Length: 336
Ligand code: PBG
Image (tube, rainbow, N blue to C red):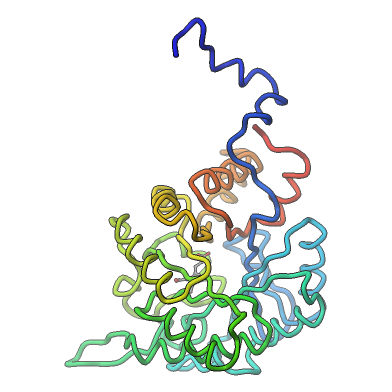
């Protein structure tokens, strides 16, 4: 391989040849679109995430999903948003069969049936008054999250979501053994066909900030470092993913995406047979939005480059707030 016989530029000379030799593709079918569902009222924009709304379970949400389908986006992950006065220390709003996520799941399944694939985030932070992802206990004057009590509630939540029509449940609380507990509960209730997309490698990240505003789910005291992963660790992600796969996860996940492309690549290399999702989180979305609004970058080009990079790193699926816009932009042609 030597110049002048070898000239890499020949493969970059035109759009046609670049498209012909491109290693990575990006399609609307790669995306899972997050939806914030709230109990009532009207659609409410999330100021820290321009373009994203909290949707009451009803007609406006149906219209929004129809719009997504018309763009080729047919996978959705649901998150519940509750006003403070509907939260309690045990997060009962999360496993109430009449709760906001079960209602949204039922509505969307009744309306769209198999045209949509529905994922439901399984966690308690959106429903607990203290904002932690599990049950808070006290031991010798210290507060901690009780792992084993918490995963029992996740299992209950997962069964409620399965009953309501979720195709996949997505445990995001980073409790030990959560996938095994959920798998056992789903099977006991006859939901062998309901899958688990496990947030295996979920880091304690500053990039969740805008989501926590959107879902009002920030912890009221302390932080999540005692359960979410340490950003300094890459290889530990392999342990988390291995455990999730052994416990019965069907799809594994790395989250966030952009600051953890190395982890995505590592997991894909070690478990090439495991479908891998990457969650391009709220902070990644809001950063591009804010920089574009300030006139610092070209939003379309930056967003499509970021999404392509996440696929290139090894993700099979991307959870992204850009799903609808990106699907539209992809139709107009990729900027490469
Ligand atoms: C719930 C959950 C969070 C996100 C997804 N599921 C927040 C958190 O862990 O604090 C963040 C998603 C995002 O930032 O877009 N545990």
